[in-house]
Length: 375
Image (cartoon, rainbow, N blue to C red; front, side, top):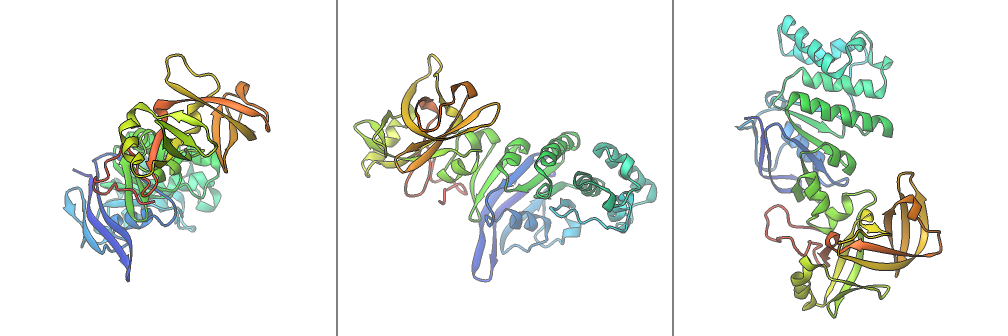
């Protein structure tokens, strides 16, 4: 068993607590991504798993072994950092094999592991070069090779693609996913980039203020956001969040427009109506359409257009609703002109409603441990 378990893990610096009682299971062989904004505790949590940060409370198990008091060297994990941390005076083969040499791995075994890693990463032709002769992507492959030869219980990645340009980041995402498919080793990956999280993960841990905001598959996180925070953080452009009030069985926007209450939310909205009826409506840009599909329970809204952004395959249309702006993703042929009024339909089943006070989705269970919203 080579999974990870965290039980009520906390971290404090003096009187300031930055990680608040994290409970988490990382299944054996799973690719788990910690994602969240700067300061949410994701890198601190990763460093505590690696043993580079002491924990203030709780327990960490790696492969069924309690590692609280085991130093980093003894935890059998391999870490890949944002900074490649390569030795500039060493050739690639020496950089990759240095850790094995320090651990006293026999030369024949070290040579076999190095050659296997180089073949997996397709860097056999780079083994006699020095880091200064490599591109950023090649250096990152070397850093990954240094981790692979360890044959660890788990790989820990701390924002490894942050220093690469957009095109190379996309290429390296594919490489990392391919690598995980070959090795089947447990991976914990830290990023602030929700696109990386969505494309790489088997399970995503969304962190906010040192707490788990939501844990789930990429589809669950995107399609069933547990809180307003998750809805706004995951997605590019993010989910539109619009203040609404329940009035006479409808949802009224600031502009005065009214839309039907989605069927799955009717009971929950009735409960909120008894407390004033104010809440936040959420709808993703791609759930708008200029021509609704037959058989879909849709509603229409007409708003003035402020900005149009063509993206080639689709177009972003920014519209004014009261004092706010929302964005719709439509087909280029349906894009309106700035300054015009644009009539759009949206699927009622794709709407989300969040409470004003704590930001929790009206359909979410507020008592699920470790998943309560904090917004």
